[in-house]
Image (cartoon, rainbow, N blue to C red; front, side):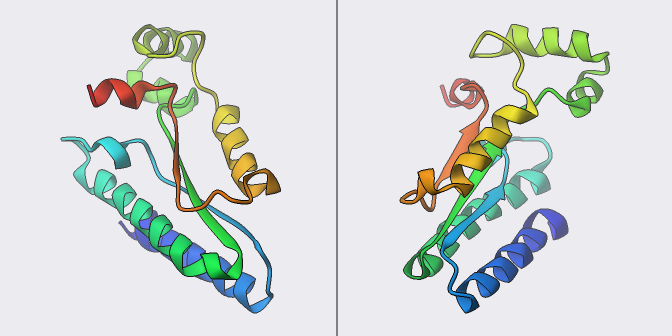
Length: 147
């Protein structure tokens, strides 16, 4: 909770203060996880902390909108990193095969670049009228959970 929630609140508060005082219009992009939208029976504290981030994003977007500041969130699913390898207890190539076989959207394993591309979009002027939203970047896997 300290890092995932209080840390995120501190970052948003600091950025908001600097942007409002400097009369800077722009974007604040937070990160959560798809578990913030589907819940889970394991890692309850982690899930709860990510739910809190979504509440922060929604409230901050309402508070900061009048200053021209957008606040959004990116919630990745499982990303093809060393963490994925550790999760499955196998080497990267084998972990990717295991993940891909269960993935909803076929054609590969989600890479950090897939998440970064959404962050870049939200930070850019291309998203100038997007605020208060949570963008799930998980290849549709969270849709399977909600069925």
